[in-house]
Image (cartoon, rainbow, N blue to C red):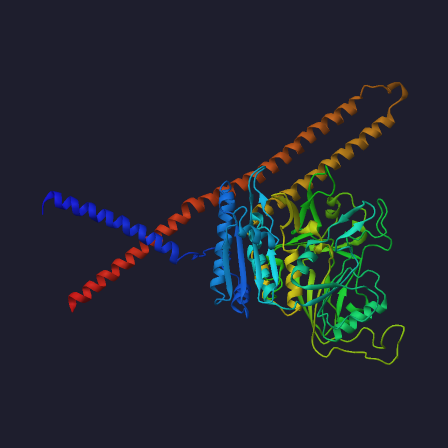
Length: 630
C-alpha cells in the first residue's frame, strides 16, 4: 500500500469518525432529551412520589401550554436556562402520565395568534429591561370540562417550589370538586381594609396558598352547627370563644369531622383593642378551653417555650444589634417527626412565642408529636415577654430542663364530649347530641398562631415589575400538608415537602453560639467591674471634705481609676482574643472542607478507579489461565 493511499484512508477514517460523533450526538440529543442522572442526596431533580401519582392517575386528558418568548429572551441567559429547566420538568411529567398529560410548547411572537392565545389565558408579558421587549414565561392548563388554571410567571427565585406549582396546577385540573375547609379565625388572616391607615392590608400568604387548592369557606364564630359539607375545620386563635361555639366544634369532631387548630399563649399578631405601647385588652392568649381537657391534652396559656439551641438571631428594633431570641425558634429537620407525612420532609419551620402541648396524665388518646424543641429548652412566663425591650433579658436565669417540648401534635382515638349534658344553655333539650365519637378522631393542634403569619416564612419581592411572595421557610407547606392530609388527599405532600436547596452551616452556627456564650459572660464581668468601681468612686466622693472638693481627683481616686483602666484593657483584649479564636476555628473548618473537596474526593475516586482496573485485570488473567488450561 502506497503512502498516498494510507493518507487517503487515514483522512477518510477521520472524516467518518467526525460524522459518526456528530450523528451520535444528534441522536442522543433527541432520543435522550430530558433524561437525567440525579446524584443529589435528596433527589432534588427527580419527580416526587406525589407528582408521579398525580400524573399517572389522571382519568381525563389535561392539556398544558407552556408559553416562552425565545427571541425576546436572548438577552437573559439565566432566564433561558431556567426556561429549559421548566420545559424538561413538564416533559418528564408528560412521560409519566401515560398519554393523559398533553404538552404544547408555544413561542408567542408579537402580533401573532399565539400571543392572542396567551392573552386569552390571562398571561401577561413582563419586560426584562427598561424599554426592552416583553417576555411571556408562563403556563396554562385546561381539562375536558372547560376548567382553566394558569401560572402567570415562573419565578427563578422560586425554583425550589417549581415542581409543586406545576403539580398543584395539574391536580386542580384533575379534580372536579375540591375539598371544603371551614375557617374560623380570631385574627385578620384575609385581605381587609384598615381604617387606621386607610389602606388594604394583604391577607396571609399561608391562607391564600390554601385557597388556591381547596374550597376554603370563612365561618362565623356564632355557635351555629358547622355545615355538613365541611370536611375539615380550621380554627385560628380561638380567643374568648363562648361555650356555644366550643360546643359546635365539639360536635363536629365527634361526628367524624377533621380539625386543625392554632392556639397561642401570646399571639404577636393579635392587636385587637391594643393602644399605643399597651397590649390588647384581655391579653393575647387563646385556647380551646374544656375541649382540650376532654381530649386529654394539656396546654398552659401562661407559659412560653424558649430554646437556647434553636432560637433565631433577630433585631427587635431598628438600630438595635441582632441577638439571639430564644422565644423565636427555627425548627430544623431533627425537630420534625420522621414518621408523619405532614412534616417528615420539611426543612425549616419558624414560630414565635409558642406554647407547649403534652398528653394529660391518664388520657387514653394517642398523642403523636409533630414538631418538638431541642433538649436545650425550657419554659418562660408569658408575662416576661409582654414588655420586653431586649431579647438578651430572656437568657438571664434561663435554665434548660433537658426535655423536648411539643409545639404541634396529632391526636388519634375515641373522644368523649366536653359537654356531656348537651348544648350549653339548652341542657336536656331534645335533639341530636353526641356524647362520644363513633370513629377515631384525627386532630392536629399547634401551640402557635404566628406560624401562619408572613414575617416568619415569606418575603415579598419585586420580580420584573410584579410583586411576589417568596418562601424562605416551610410554614406554609406545613399548613398545606396538614389540611391535605386531614382532607384525605396526600398526593401533594411529597411535592410540597421537597428539601430546600439551602444547607445551613450547622457547625459554624454552633461555634458562633459557643463564642456568644463566652462573650456574654465576659461582658457581664466587665459590667460588674464597672459598677463596683463607680460605687467605690461614690464612696470616695462622699468622704471628701469641703476643702478637697474640686475638679482634681484624690490619689485614691487616681489609683482606682488607673486600676480599672488596666482591667478594662485586659478584658477587652480577652474579648478580642475570643472573637479571633472563633474566626480561626471557622477558617480552619473551611480549610479542611476545601481539602476534602479538592484533594480527598478526587483521591478516593482515583483509588476506586485503580481498584476497578486491578479487579478487571485479575479477571482477565483468570479467564486466560482457564482458557489455557482447557
